[in-house]
Image (tube, each protein chain N blue to C red):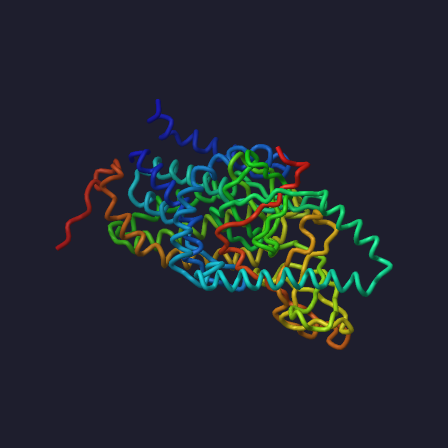
Length: 286
Length: 197
C-alpha cells in the first residue's frame, strides 16, 4: 500500500492541485488552516535551532547583542543612562508645564494600576525576509502570550507578537519590518543637554536595519539622539520604550531646504537577540 | 530511501535554517541572506533517490518550508503573520521534477553536484514562491495585501540567497555524499560511491 502510495504519480499530481488551491485561498482562511500545523512544526524544531543559534552567536561576536561580559556591563550602563534620561525628561516636562501636573499625576496613577507581567522568552529563530523580518520565541499561549503583545529587550522596543501564538511558540514581528509606522519623540541622549524634543513618525522600508522619518527643518534633531515610542496605536506599556538612536540627519532629497530625513537604528541588533521580554498585561493573563 | 533517515535530516536542515542564520548571515541592502539547508537536502535527495521518491521527498520538504516561513499581510490597521501553504510546496515539487531530469548530466558523487543542483533547484523554488505570493498580492487577482511586498526586491534577495546556498552546498554536499550509504537509496547504482582510480 505504502509503495503504491509513494509511487503513484497521479496522487502526487492530485496533491499538487490541492496545494495550488490552498495557496490561492484568502488570508483569513489560510491563517485558520495553517495556524495549528505551522506551530506544530515550529515547536519541535525550536530546541535544536536554539542550540545551534547559541553556538552561532558565540562564534560570531559582532552579531551578539551583549558580546561579552564587559560589553554586557556597558549595555546595562547605557540602559541605565537612558532610563535616567527618560526620568529627567518627564521631570522637566513637569517643571516646565505646571498646568499639566495634575494630568501627568493621573497618567502616573494609571500606570501604577495597569501592572504588567514581564515574561522572559528565548529566541529560537530569526526568519529573514524582505517583507517580514520575524523572530520566533519559545513562549506561547500556555505562558500567557497573546496576539499584538509588546516585545522588548531591556528598555528597547523589539516588536509585537505577530499572530495568534501556538501553545509553545510565537512569532515576533520586528519594528524594522516593512509597513511599520511608529510615532516617536526624539530627545538628546546627553543628560546635561538643554531640553528639546522633536516629534516624528518613523517608517521601515528600504534598509532593513533602519527606520526613517521626514521632519521639518525647524525641528532640531542631532546624531546620537534617542527616539522613544509615543504611538497611540501601541499599548500603554510600550510607550516610552526606546525605538533606537539617531544614526544620521540628512537633507530630504525632494525638499532639502525645508525638510530633513532622520535615520534611526535600533540599539540592540534585533536579529541577534537571544532573549527577549514579552510584556503581558494582567487583564489578558491566562 | 529510508524515510526515518530522511526525517532526521529534514529536521536537522530545518533547525540549521533557523539556527545557523545568526552565524552565517551576510548583510545585504535588502536584508541579511542565509544559506538554505533544506534546498541542499532536496538537491542531494534528487541526485540519489529514485524519481518518485525524490518527488515525494521534495513535496514534504516544501510543505515543511511553507509551515516554517511565515509571510506578513495587512489586515485592517494591523499586520498579521501566518504561514501560506503552497508556494514552497509547489516550488520544491517543480524543482524536484527538474532535478530528476537534470541529474543524468551530473557526476552525483561529486560534492559540486549538490551545489549545482541546489542552484538549479533554487531557480524553480524561488520563482514559484515569488510568482505565487505575487499572485496573492496582485490587486487584479487575490489582492491579499502582503506587507512590504516588492517583486523586484524579492527576486534580487532570493537570487543572492541562491548564490550563497550554492557556495555553502559544496562543503555540505561533501558531508552528505559521505553519509549517502546510510540513506539506503534504492537505485542499483546508488548503494556505494563509485571507486576512484
